[in-house]
Image 1 (cartoon, one colour):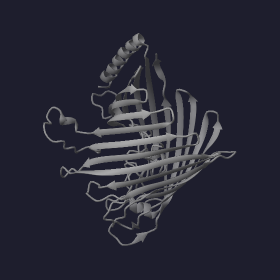
Image 2 (cartoon, one colour):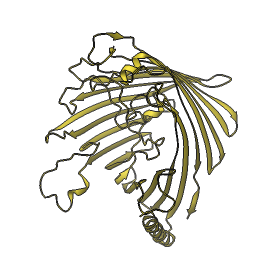
Image 3 (cartoon, helix red, strand yellow):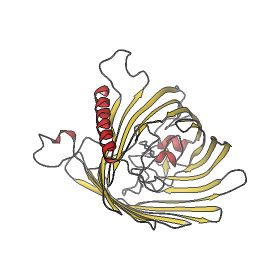
Image 4 (cartoon, one colour):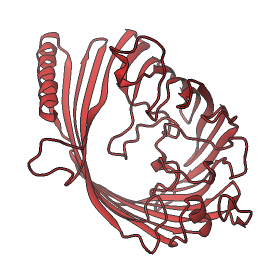
Length: 429
């Protein structure tokens, strides 16, 4: 299958190349090979004395073709995601993921207005709510239509919509639009407005997603309203965000949740320093209303600690609730050479919701969840080759054990990794 699809892509790329040569268009064929080795000993959840470290190598391989001509743009990216050793040396079946990450066409009807249709990544502002999730080898993309308006003053409006159905809809689906069995929204609409100034920028976001409950045909809708702003004051940069969620979850419970974040970046002689705090509201085991904010399509790995204890398809709560999070952090980056820098992040985590010894007990625990230190060395060896390596350490508390439903976990948890990225442009014309 991989060989067939790759040949198809290359054949299509060749056709586009011939067309581009005749019509003075641009064609770019690029590739990416990205293996990452990971040692996990308390990654995502606290380890116990019975747990042994995990080690594996996961690789992403992508081939992308991008074609532009006058008012038209087309892009296709295919990818193979596999764990080293997941197949025999000689095999006929392959458990790895091979799929289309991007496949869209875009047409510019007016100098300031265009429409993009197809499978595409959606990323806005700092990727808090909409992000491409590039850290995950598979990434995140949506099947959607997007309308784009942008002018020369720094003002932009994006509006998008999606309606999803299961793969077996055609040819057997003649009635109804029941959507189940896939962890995805059935329908989604959003509007993003943005304005840039010389020393500031601000964005507004509205999103409405509808998910269908598996037990019946009821679709529940959740609305998210957000504002993101940044202001430069000399050498200091101030940033702030506020999001509010309403509607209902799949259990039919009303949602009343919010996220508030603030950070300040200071320039020093040695290194920039960023101080900040993120507050995501949450529900405890007794809540009848859903007070847990969910950063639905964001790149959470960039915010709440590199060890992914929170929000990365990784629940932390009791009785099916999400406890929320208070994250106070300090981030910095040391420039080691023209090609290398060392990032250091320190996090202090607390729970906004009450934590009980067990979900059904009345014994309350403290709000402190733990502290995490993240170190990341980034080396741009060349424009086509990058090396990253990282180490993270989490000191967990009994409250975090309870939210993770882990018995007497170890307080000390660690994660180490090395990632190589080969990303050349194979052909450009």
